[in-house]
Image 1 (cartoon, rainbow, N blue to C red):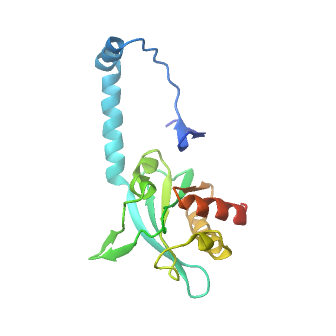
Image 2 (cartoon, one colour):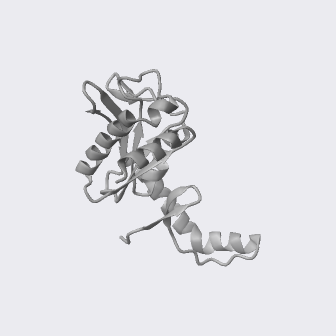
Image 3 (cartoon, rainbow, N blue to C red):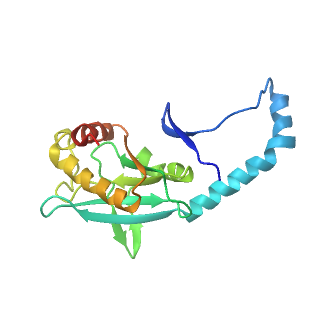
Length: 191
């Protein structure tokens, strides 16, 4: 299996694939789909669906600061060891309400990054969707997101992820107010 080259696209970290189709009009596109690309498109669709079925969600809670825990949803592709791990910071108050009910992992998926994490996993990356720490159950304000306590908590998350995949590259990704977390933590940890 050929290794993907990763680059920063307009919407974040995406795999780079060469394109070689020169399509001038709609009829050429339809002919390409029908005669050439359709079997490959179907294969890609089947593989994407199957990888979605085999990705695993895990609820992880780790101790961080004195008496404090940090929880996150870890979603990984089952068949490969990821080269890239994305730590996802949801916007608003950062609360995804991660919990276990009747033995099943439950959490709110209204945030874009949390809801779409499977797309990153389909590309071979692992994701860690961050919930609020145990001392901020009502949510994280901007002051907390920019503070050392938050950076310390996420430092422990990074340590946990690096213990699972020592050679993987870890990226911090935020949406809306989650970008405050991503940029502040990156600045404070500088690794």
